[in-house]
Image (tube, rainbow, N blue to C red; front, top):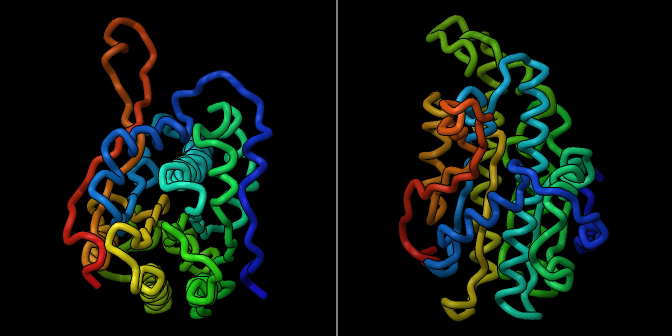
Length: 307
């Protein structure tokens, strides 16, 4: 079975050592989101678009391909830690009966970059008891172009839960709905993000992009639908939240990014831009640049319960 159906509670994070601080830790970004009032407007359906992953020249340093790969891996670890922190805090604030669900690839929570991010931050700020109520469901990307993403089966299965979660989150929707390897194949083609020519695109590559786009839209729609099903019949203050954190978004300003934002804006209540900005203030005095987390709301529509 392509999807790993077992649900587990996040308990390993309680055992991490209390290490020194790190300006790139995911906990900083989670705190930034919460300080900006991420949940203050009440239950919502929100999207977090990770700008640092799509604009390395602006939000991170290093010009070589090797360094870019390292920063991308760090971003992935930081995103996973930050999302777990946000969900753990939500479970803690809403009481002992609150549960959340996180859907992601297994590698996101078992890779070296995630462990390093957790170690550098000293572990989650949310209590262990709350973190244990963040349940994980793993899924894999489609094996080949045209295959239905295993994520679809996972999302459809959420309608048979024995409990009602207060939030359902997906980490890395682009990666979960794109066939393995298609991103690398299309990265430098004419018309792609790194080579934005207007023509001479091979039809097979156009088909690959179209298939990935359809699956992305389907995944987003099924997430919203699953949350609506959970929220049905509940009071407005108790409705489930939908949270999508995409850290493999298309480059800012590209046609793909415009289309993606338009799709997500029509399905979700709020859009946020997240990432790391480089502060250059200290460089004038010979100091090193400092990377600071940011979370900026791009727009908000109707409140929860509109579907």
